[in-house]
Image 1 (cartoon, rainbow, N blue to C red):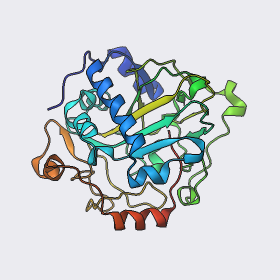
Image 2: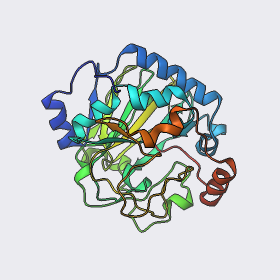
Image 3: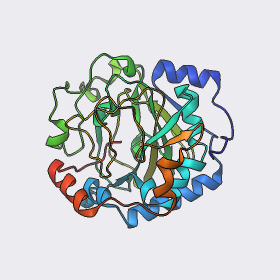
Length: 306
């Protein structure tokens, strides 16, 4: 069962999440979890999954991976045993909380890969009007704007526009949509209310799937930027089989309009559902390699997103 966080989010933090679309929260996770997940991230860098090999940019040093909870027990335990689900529940105000997916983002010293401005919801196979989705992005190294700290446009989760899913290499599959281009924020920074907090290991950003964010390259000559994001869904989130969304390498059995659920998106709170978790609790559950290769070849996915 999910542990209780070291503290609850304050009413002021929850109000800021609602108003700004993002908060930086500190002191939620025990050091034991931060240490364990730090080692798990290093292990993922050394042994990437098929998706990790597809989205990493080896010649630039960027390393990333997705759905690690399916293959690595530390990430699985984070989903079902860490305080993360209970933290997500506080901002989602949801009775039922499901794990959507997890993702690592590692930019070592000198990794000159910026992340274009984007919001997450258009990357995901969900109804883009569903708001009950959040991310918990945890830093495992000290990070600031110069070392590729995430930067957000406060209040942009309330904008009516939906923007193309743009990867750093401008992958044509992900951009092949009728959504608008994201605004040119960097050249008009004084027109936006921007938020990029300095962070220490264990600090986390909790943000809405609709808030616009991005990051620079890692310009630091001393600090790597290792980060891990777990994505969570609350009540009422629906699957949408839409073009130009992240590929799913496991069979999930969902059709457009179905509630997010099943073995790929398991319930964590109020309690896991046995039938959704049995395969994973009995051991690693890698995707079928031939199927994964076929999916990745068809979409030609490459590049990190956060």
